[in-house]
Image (cartoon, rainbow, N blue to C red):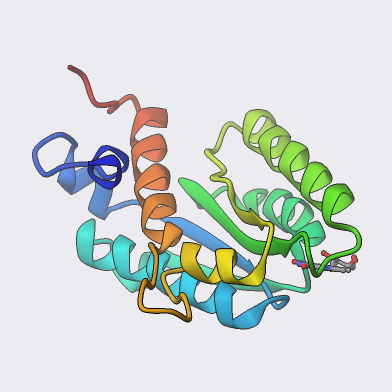
Length: 171
Ligand code: DLZ
């Protein structure tokens, strides 16, 4: 029920416009297993659910979550992307700088989106434990694997990019 509400349903959006979008994915090298699963969730959703060709999607790596806003701003200057999905993982139990990095990156990403006029999605998981982060990447260690939030970020990127082109969903 909740997951359905996050994903654009067929017929509720301009599928042709969606499939022509150019998307930038930037991900960190910290917490590589979890980040890779999230990145793959994003890529699979963009290409399978929204039929965006892989050649329309650029994937760039940065060291950590702190670098995501700078990289987003720098790469948006090229003027070729309709939306950006920065991906990172911060785990409170494992990251001494947790509060500093998560607050700084969150505010800075919001500002880059507002200042650039290009939608920037919030693809940073801020979790209390590693297991929580694994669950939110759909790779939980137990029987319950959880849900890959990359799928939701892809949907948010498509929805906001279309909205930015004046093709918002109307009810
Ligand atoms: C330094 C640091 C720490 C302690 N933890 C994380 C983390 O859990 N996730 C992450 O993405 N990055 C972490 N970093 C690295 C910083 O984001 C940044 O890359 C470095 O401080 C260099 O500026």
